[in-house]
Length: 503
Image (tube, rainbow, N blue to C red):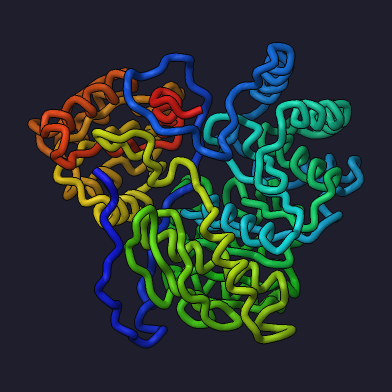
């Protein structure tokens, strides 16, 4: 089933504030681990740009695996000691590489990575050399550190680790806790950017903001994507509390690009901006989405930036949430170039158009197979699930949609499933290879309460779950328009991507 054709009906030319006043849910960050070598017997499309395979050279592959094993021996990303003391000590001994270039710092609950990729594309289109640090990764750890829009090579990743490795032991011996996996990768990214060197760095927080390892930079622009409930055990149980943690990336004299937020979260951000004398650009006030319509392969947008309007922007991503991510990214880049403060003008429209047209975001409404169509989306919280449900309904118009869901045990699984209940005809519950994965039978028990027993199937292995879902979709016939959506956990999406032939 292909996406719906472009809508020829003109959108009403409503006032700007009426078009953007509603809060928009966003898709979440993408985090997956490397899966095994099994492949699913299914048609798959060509490999997606920006997701490297394992190194072809056996020696390089062995060296990369050795580095991965050393990093895995440190605290993982789900175990945290809320402090920047260790990363500050490490970067000091490395000569503070994070201060060698200006940065755009991104926090929020959903949409950070997609927004980072858009910002990177825009900066690159204006001939700036870029570094992008995002987390976690789709299939290869090297994706986390990108130069000029591409993940660094395995060889460069290994070299960067070996360059800083002697200093890791020095810091480990001086601190109460050893440097974590994420702290080491953050230092590697900053060192790689300085070594390149880059003209600008686009840096996504790992979690929160105030005590996140990335919060050793003083971002010229601080971007806050929509805040919702996630990681409540670490960040707080209300949007207001979570905003308090995330507002820590707003530094003195910076420009804050603020996406649509819950009122209490926005209040916290604005208060922080006043405290540090930062300038604020708000979605729905200073910038936003003027119009959008579904188009083949994505959507056509008219964006309002800090300097004026940008019409006829093609974005090859699906969903209203991605349109709002695009508006945030555009405003961030305008702010970086001084638009709206030093001068009032739009950036070159042709450059903006070509940059957005080249954007990709693997694992976010990503089509990886046809006949039947299989879509991957990394939603893992209720807000992300709602955005994904709206996007798949708008863009594809499936006659029947089968869900494959593998969730983490520490998430709001019921809220997630309830968001998909109206659009899933059946759901196949499964698990991924992570130790955090929810037991399939426990997940099925919740799914039965939401969907009813007749709509739920259990397949403990992900490859079997994919086969089962594809078989259910094929029951409708080759030209029926049935499809499969794989979602529920960032790890599930990554492993499904490999099983379906993406490398």
